[in-house]
Every structure is written in C-alpha cells, then in structure tokens.
Amino acid sequence: GEDVEQSLFLSVREGDSSVINCTYTDSSSTYLYWYKQEPGAGLQLLTYIFSNMDMKQDQRLTVLLNKKDKHLSLRIADTQTGDSAIYFCAEAGSGNTGKLIFGQGTTLQVKP
Amino acid sequence: KAGVTQTPRYLIKTRGQQVTLSCSPISGHRSVSWYQQTPGQGLQFLFEYFSETQRNKGNFPGRFSGRQFSNSRSEMNVSTLELGDSALYLCASSWSGGSGYGYTFGSGTRLTVV
Image (cartoon, rainbow over all chains, first blue to last red):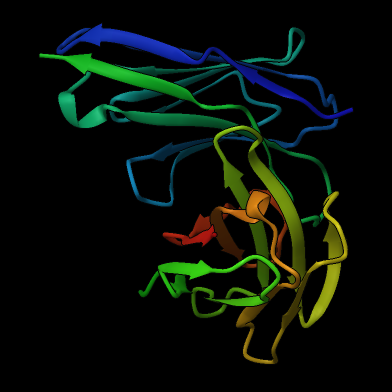
C-alpha cells in the first residue's frame, strides 16, 4: 500500500544546513511535495519535484530524489529561526485523484 | 490572488451534533480535497471533488460527507459527532486535481467535540 515515512524531529543551529529525509513506497508516484506547517496554520507548499528529476533547487531549498531507493530529502541552507516548523513530505500517485499521502511530519527546531 | 478560504476557523460542538465546514477554492481551481489532521493519525485524505462530482474517497465512515457547488466551493458535513472527530480539517484546491499542478491549502477549521 501507499506509505510515507519521515523522522520525527531535527534540531540544528541557526546558520547550519538542515536535511529532512523521507521515504515512500508507491512506485507510481509522479510528484513529491514538501509542505511547511507553522503553529496554528495550514500547510504551505514549499516545493515539489517530478519523479523523473533527480534534483531541484529553489533559493535556499534543495530537493534530492533517489527514485530507485524511493528516498526524498529536503535541504535548507543557512537555516533561520523562522524556519522552525513541521515539514511534511507528500506523494501523489498518477492521474487526477486529488489525493496526497503525507508522512508524519518532521519538527525542525532551530536554535539561535 | 486570494488563497483558499475555510470557514469557520474554530468550532466547538457537542457529541451527537452535526457540523458543516466550508471551503472556497482559489478562483479557477475546480478540484477541492479535504483532509483531517490529528496528532495521532496525522494527515488523512477524506475525499476530493471535481466539477461537483466526488472522484475519490478515503477510508472514513459514512458520517463524513461532502459536496461541491457549481462555483467550486465545497462543504463537508460530519453527522453524529464523536469525540474522536476533534481535529483540524484542511481543504486544498488545485486546477484539476492532477498532481502536477500543486495543491494549495487553506488555514483549516479547528473542530473540537465535547
């Protein structure tokens, strides 16, 4: 079945790089997403990658995809205290289903 | 452009009551999906509507239902509320529901059942 796994917690120092990892099981996944959720808020789309890509860079964010191992990572360069939040990895299967499968979320704590 | 609007932001209901939540998608978006977020189960897909038709449904009991109107606005209804229905309910809109177009989420409705 469809499943997405993430580590639950990551703590870094301000200015360091953060790497959040995710694994998924659905080999038919077409797009993989990273969302950010701050306390009391909805989900903010950070970036997404198509399954035939290996890497995507967007300012401080770098997404790496290893389709063979079904492993996705999000690297945040020069992490700031404002990056403290919960980060969710999500995968979408093929077709117009409107459905995303989310991981449990990784809480990123950034220490000054 | 305006984002996805969910109303109300907060609700407190009593067990056994029913509740209706509303979601107005981004203008031009025709697909609306609903999710339930709880600390224990995380984010779970409820259902998706496109052009007033339910195209996909998650594993939730029949007490959870929804509909979509001709202007793409969507409502979800939960009947006979249980304590376990307390959650943040999020809706997401996209142009077609296809994964390549991205999904924009609203701020959610926080439902508390007492």
